Amino acid sequence: MSEFEDIFGVQPEVEASAPGRVNLLGEHTDYNDGYVLPIAIPQRTQVELSRSPDEWSRFRSMNMEGLVQYRAGGVFPSGFAAYLAGCFEVLREEVVNVVTPVNLLVRSDVPIGAGLSSSAALEVAALRGLRELFHIAVNDVNIALLAQQAEIRFAGVRCGIMDQMAASLADERHMLFLDTRTLERRLLPLPEHSELVVLDSGVPCRLAGSAYNQRRAECEEASRRLGVVALRDVRDAATANVLPEPLNRRVRHVVTENRRVLDAVSGVSAVEFGKLMNASHASLRDDFEVSVPELDCLVELLQKHPDVYGARLTGAEFGGACVALARTGRGYKVGKEVLVAYQAKGYYGSVLVA
Ligand code: GLA
Image (cartoon, rainbow, N blue to C red; front, side):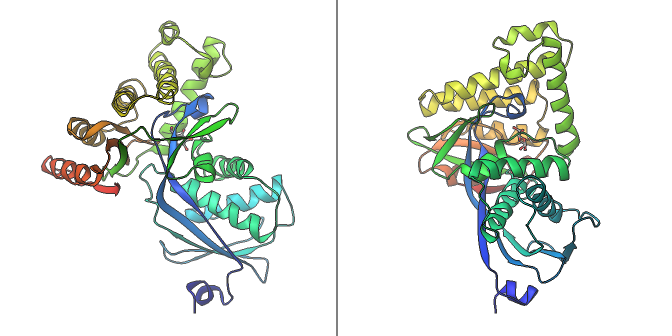
């Protein structure tokens, strides 16, 4: 008997999945209408679904204890089930009101709290499953937009569109270059002679929700003062000098980070790409202030490694993972060696992708 049948007493009718992502460049630019460059990671979230026999939806995650029950208009669940119920509600309100309750089982190996978008993977997988189960005509971009609505409205994070677009449209072999204002996008190969290493700092992302919303509010305040629709419209970082601290540095980060993404997709070598990643980390650490000492230490160890072109923190941060561009075939060795050095400084990290 399958796990699904064991839990819900029926066979699943459909299954769907979506990957986590690692962002290579373009951090905290998406809610400023800017450019981003994520790529899918091998870890995925998979869902199985069937229609429920009654008015209750039932959600179960193999990563957690217990079954969560939810019915429209009832108490809204928390934790992983909030994302699922959120997707359900958004779909029902914005697309079709014939979506009926479901049984839904989640399996995932996307690390949680590491800045690799486990929530977007869950939302997109669930929406794909619901699309198939109820034969709903929504395309992959709409799936991403619905997933973003679910996150903003029901998980309370005023996120941009990067993670959900990556979960819905990226693959593991190409970087997804996305203009978050127009949603125009291109899939591009990694620079020649390079591969990715993703390491976890061992520090869970702290304060991510509240500090994230605060950064976003600062960027909105800066655009208002500069008289632009979004910081994407500021071309020259020196424009920010008229603003008080810390708004001036927030703007400088966004403007220079957008430039780095555009430079990175202009066909640069792995060496140049690596320098852009290093500059991105410094900007996130000093101007945007979203790093923590453990991540700075891990990134510095990566940057010093002879087989690494460049490294930076990735995701919203205040903990979690960092990403490096390494010489082809050396990624795993880089990860292992750097973690030994990290441990010698009293920290415990792990290799997530290499
Ligand atoms: C989180 C958000 C994204 C993006 C990143 C920072 O992952 O969900 O929309 O803003 O942080 O680049």
